[in-house]
Image (cartoon, rainbow, N blue to C red):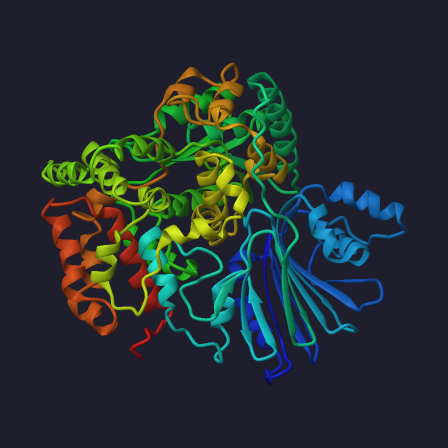
Length: 626
């Protein structure tokens, strides 16, 4: 696991050694070794977190003739298999690292090599004689990769900080990215919050050939549900795939562990990991005394598997303000997902013991694990009621007492009724999103406010023939999973030099899930039905019957208490006015309604707080020139 960065140099002169300063901005991603390569045409760099082949795996790594060089971030779990095939074709290896395997695979199969790799990665390959740079990102977007075009030149890096290190790249707020951020809680690819800076799509490669650009997918997700798959067949196949994936994800030359929340997903990963490794290390975050404390569940699971279990109790007495401000540096783009804070502390604790942790990310998006998927179904029924009646019900719901519960009944009722008044695609995104359209328009001035529902139109035409649930799963796997869930996990873990691996996102499991009929994902009110059935005789009953809990903080309560001073300092009327973009009265109303318990705006305030901290930390300019 590492961080990478680089740039070409056709149209601009760059002082020698700049790449070293660029790599220094992501030393946290790879504190074990930093390596660079510079020619008159290109500069490449890598910051390495040593996981495989500790002695010989430093980068860059060169082809035998010295013409092609690689810098690479990630893990390829089938590298031994690919290595054996390459050796049969005559290739010889000097290291045991997966990096050299990726390089030799590229020399053999060029861009077709990427589809042979199982794992998570961001890759940069330079061929000097061809004046050719190729970038690639893994299928599900587990590892990040950003790019910026300037004339005939290309800049790239694992984090935006690598691009911010170049003084010639402006830091202007992108209003399209901002509109999506305030609506969705994240910025969907290819957008970022900075004009001109883009994300490489998951499953995509980009080629720079002597100043000319080309980008193309090497893998595309396709939902082709097969009504003939029985529950028993699905259980058997998922069992085989999970066992194989988890065993591959356990490959490491350093100590590793498992994140254990006590929920179905992480417990399933732990089950298969415990089959292969005795006395695992497991790690959890608790909220003792809070309404969503999960300690009873993860303690039971840890005892069930006899793990070495450690718990971090996250409470208001912790240095929350300091952690949030440090997160502002490590979050290339602000994470409006309040779950980033517990992931920060979980990563910090985990790194004291191990370098690698397995997690359960991805299962909800593959198998239908969010309550929003049930809300989608209930909304179909609700829309049979006249809109006027639903508006009246929403008006009455807004009179309900506001609680400090993480997601209380009144919060759910208001959110659902408001969403039922939207078209289906917009409603689905609104369930997990932030501000409604009217509030977004009040918060800031822009020539255009993007409609999040339009993201549905970016899916292939066959998405509209595979069933409503599968269509929403497809949408979430394309955007929400890489741009929120995986983004949050990568930044918070790599800030502490910790590699986190999600076995559910092995592309064989992803493709298997895309073939399942909807009834094996959600059966009645049962979410993740096939996964639940698979684990029924393997996990404690409490794990299977507990209600769905998000990995989150008591945001509503904390913004009325421990986090209120930070909020008031960061988003004072003067600070808001200084942006020249946001409306002071609208921001004050969001805060005031929350303080006075007219609404639970804790999650919306988290998104605004992290946005303002980020803009200040990175001196991001608005289009007004402020």
